[in-house]
Structure formats: C-alpha cells, structure tokens
Image (cartoon, rainbow, N blue to C red; front, side, top):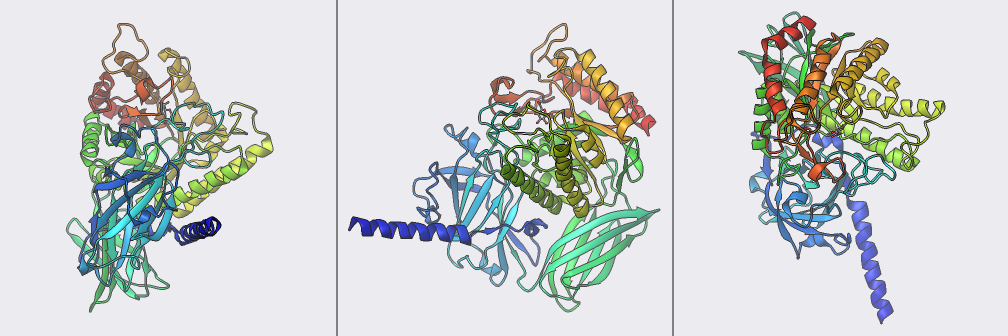
Length: 634
Ligand code: GCB
C-alpha cells in the first residue's frame, strides 16, 4: 500500500517537474524592443501595488504547485527590493514567490495580451492562472511573454512569479567566486548590494491581433541643415503597407512604406533640422502606422533626437563638435526602496545633477529604469549606457566562463534593443572592470600565457563586434581597471579607466595620486591615440567628518581628491570626460572597507544631502572659467 502511494506521488512529482521544465518558454529579447504604450490601438495596465509574497527557501514551490495560490504569504510592495522591506530578509537571496490578481478589461478581447516584467533580479518564472508561461535569467532588463491563451475573461487572473537571486560565478554580475579579491557578505563580487526581486514595475499590455509594430530602429544623421532619419520597422503579421510620420517644430513629414517579409525601411529627410544636444535637447516624434488609408491596424509613436556621435584622436564629437562629459557614476539605490524604481528620487537626482552642473552619467553598473533615459532625452543629459557586465572573469571553469559569455551576449542584445532610440545614449559600456586572470580560485595567481591571452582577447572582441553590428551609430567602450591587459583598449572608441590613486593605492597621498594618474593618462593616450575618460575617481567621505590637514574619510579630503583629478584632466586636451564616483552614497554587501555596509564615495549622502564635494563641483562645473576651459579644449 505504502509503496503504491509512494509511486503515485513520485509520478505526480515527475509529471509536475516535467511540465514545469518543458512548458516554461525562454523569453525572446525581441519582445522588449518597444516599451508598451496606451493609444487607440494598444492598451496597458500597470500592476504596481501590494502583492502577496512567500519565501521558498527549500525551492519546493513549483512541485507543491504554489502557482495555484499562495497560502502562507506576507505583503510586499512592487516595485521594490524585498531585502529592504522585511527585517528578516536583508541577506536572503533564495527563491520567493510573488502573486497578484487582476481583471483584464473586456475591451481587450480579440487582442494579443502580453506581460512585461521590467526587472526581476536575477531569475524569474511566470505562471498565469496556474499555467506555465515563461522564464528569464538576468537582472535589470525587461522580458515579455504572450499570455493570450492563458487568460480568463470576466474573472480575476492570478499572476504568479517565482524569483531568486542566488549569487553564482556563472552569472553576471558574478557572485560567490572562490578566492576572489573582494570578500564580503552576501558574497557579491561587485560593490553594490544584491538587491533582489521585482525592482521595477510589471505591465500587462495588449497589441492588435491582426498585425502590430514589433520594433522600430531609428538611426539619425544630418548633412548641412538637413536631418536624415534612417527608420527600420519590423512588424508581426503580414500587413503590406504603412507609413512613417516624423513631426516636430512645425513640420510633419509623412512617408508611405511597403513591407517585405515583415520589414520596411525608409530614410526621412528633415529640412532645417533641430539637432539634439545638451544645450538644445530637441526631440522629434516618430510615428509608425500599419495599414492603408482605409484602415489603420496599429500605431506606435516614439520620441527621438537627431544627433551624431564620433571621436577623433582627442575628443568625443557630438554633431561634429567636441563635448566634455562632466558627471557621475550612479546607482539605483535608496533607503527602504533598495533598487526599486522611485520616480520622486529619479526626479530629485536629475535636479541635483543639474545643480552641480553635470551634463552626463553612466548607468553603473546595469541599465536603469527606462524613465531615466526619457528624462535624459528631455533634459539634455548624455548617457553611457552600461550592461550588467560586472565581475566578468575571463578564466576559471570553462562551463562557467561560457555561461558568463552567454549572459553578456544576451545583455548586450537586450540593452541595445531597449535603449537604442534614445538620443541621450551616446555610448554603450559593455563591461565594468573585466578581469583577465587565469583561474577563479587564484585570482591573484599566475599570469596567463600568451596563447591564453590571445584566446581571451578574441572572446572579448566578440562582444564588441556584436555591439557594433547591432548599433553602428554609437561609441562602444568597456571600463578598465588594473585587472585587464591594456591592449583590450584596441577594441574601444574611448579609453575609459576607473582610478583611485591616492585612495586604495598611495593611500592618503592625493598629490602623489594626481601625479600617477597624470602620467598614466599620458601613456595611454600616447599609445592608443584615442580620447580618454576617467569614468570613476573618488574617495569615501563620512558626511560631517572634518579635519584641518587633509585626512582620509573627511569632507576636505574627498573635495581635494576630486579637485586634484579634475585639475589633471583640465591640463590635457585629450581627456574628454570625468565622471566622479559616486553621485550618492549607496548600500553594499558587508566588508571591512564598507563602513556600515555602505560605499561612502557619494558627493551626496544616501538621502541626497550635499557634502562639501557637491558644493565644490557646483562651483567648478558652473564657473565661467570651467566653460572657458572646455571651450579652449575644443
Ligand atoms: C570600482 C567599481 C565600483 C566600486 C568602486 C569603489 O572600480 O567599478 O563598482 O564601487 O570601484 O568605490 O571601490
């Protein structure tokens, strides 16, 4: 009897596991190309609010069919990181389940219904009404699935999302790397807290069933006073005709297009074009309509700008003229919210960046909520858009290495698909401080042989080739620290380095730090003949700590450190940008170097109060002499 019961349970379990493994589709990056919008042809519902939440530390939820309803749940706010909302879950990174219910308006009947999760860090699986929908791996990038066949009409629909953020050497960013130089708890091999869960909103949206615009790629350029927008449209369906309408500044230019195999391409000329720049962040509407004069099937409008980006030996050129990038590396990080989207904080950050006189930032160390890019487009900020490629180690176990390579390829595709039409994004950063060590266990161990180094170079080169193929219009960089050979800079458009001479090395000696960075920049430029940027430099500062003589951790030291680096940059024509690390103090895993579990290199505190360095930057970046200096460099 016992044996029979056991066999039945086993069969049920096998069936259940089988169903889960085979029925969860993997997300198709192509489905995230266009941000869901509301218009006459498309609908969307934002599922932000209070959801049910249950931890599943033994990972039994799928076999016990928690997708049929959570029984022992607490409440959680979405968006938001679970680590900040619960007193007992700060360091918990294993499996959890989220659940919510929603009606789908009957007016959506006959349309294709999708779900879009804007960030589930790190891996997620979705069920709707207990039916498996799909899965995605990777943090801070959206994914979407077609739910049309799983939903119920005239009844609530249960949406169940399982998420886990287990740190692993095979994931990107990497975690729990044995023998890594960075030893902390939780074991992130990166210097920001591994905030987990549904950090951004979840949307339901509908698309016309007959055919819909799946992707629009706008590549801008200009000749003289005429703008040229190369517009590529991809549709899902077999509609043969459509039009592209470009409008703005009193003009409306309509171009009919014909689709062949679902693709249409046209070049729209804009006379007397308004170019996008930090001083004039002028945006055009690009509307794509599917259908003919009698019937419109779908319509999608995006905002974009006309501008070009290039480099010469010394400068980054925006619209053919040198620009100097003044700004910060940042984080999406705030008390209680963790890495969750919080638009008041975002607006405040833009206000504070403008207050300092900054004109750019890098989305360290992952792509941010899409609203950051919309804001930057409108406010005239130049963005270095970064993938989550942090802690990339080009060594160790070959299976893990292959997993990391795969993850970076996927991220590059997802990030470019999502953000390619933003004029504010002038550069892609594929990786922050990749590491070329031979093995994971002995990170400071033996150097690679020449053959091994050549192999790694090829692996890294693949990512640059992919980025340039997907987007030939932007600059592509990686940000180098000491752990990678300099010849990787052969791959980049701009030499970008993170340096802390005077802080982690030559500790406390800012003057010496300044001399070292100066010589290093000269050497790099002499060798590679490319414009250079210091994409990170800074010192931790405990707000309110002071000293008469310069002393580490004080406001005076941080200010002097930043000033010294800016002075060095100002003396060199080929330095095209300086990004202070960091805009604001932020949460990290616990480590001896992270007082209270914070990186204190912010020029603002975590709650956005200015330190002395923020006031210094404000006077420096807004001063006439600074403007003259930037002018002279041109
Ligand atoms: C770096 C990393 C950044 C760290 C920073 C620091 O080079 O890119 O993630 O937070 O140094 O403060 O140590």
